[in-house]
Image 1 (spheres, rainbow, N blue to C red):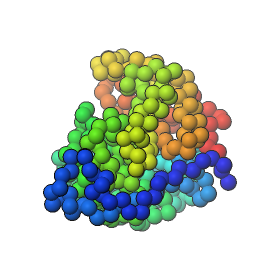
Image 2: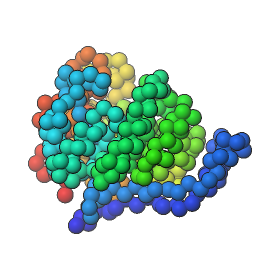
Image 3: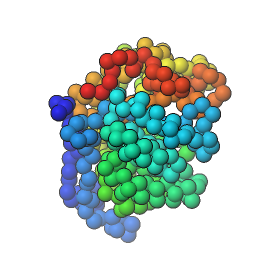
Length: 338
């Protein structure tokens, strides 16, 4: 049995939602009165059997020549990925439910790898039909693979000011409510730390079981020696604003390459590289284990379909494995999960 600390989310059996929403821009109108019913919070505990598995990773399965909505990885390729990840992590984060999530879940079950999943629901505010497919799929998969799905995350970076796919908050809340009514596991929303630090984020936090926060020191102009202290400060700030919700770090990482052009040249001040990623990964992993905080490291594999055409485009190089599935320095011998 692991002796690592377990993340316990406060189980507030009956929080009057009106009290939670006080001062958050939700007035005494009919819509708010309709939400006054008690909110029974669901506890998110990242456990695999009797093991804490909050030391986690984000997984995008697309390889070179593949992309979402286009050519897709085969079941054999996904099984290979899962076997590569299993020695290092027991908890994966997926970003969508309607395309490849069932293939991934079926492979985990068939191969008996002991992996668990935080299932994603990708929200595109301009595609009502796609959003319906996503929410329907998440509800179905959470039930069909109940032994594997620990939580469902609805939406990814839809509220932050720089979002490339912004979603009006009332529409996002509709999706959150629909999913939460259809599943028995905890439900969350993922967004940047800067959104979760805004007072308006309380309206959303009041209707989810825990907060999933993204915080990337590299994108925020931090040098390597500043990265972990900065990450701690952002986490503490979000916790302070949302004392009734546990905070999960849904993305943090350190890229191994950047092209030095455009926005990334302006924003990135730290040095990308494998040695730097290895140091950051080790520090974040030690922090997560010491605090019992769930941290999804971004990400398992390089994804060359992302970003612009330059081969050193930073969005292509966040993986701890290269796109060809060879490990980078951070996954040298001795880094496997205990």
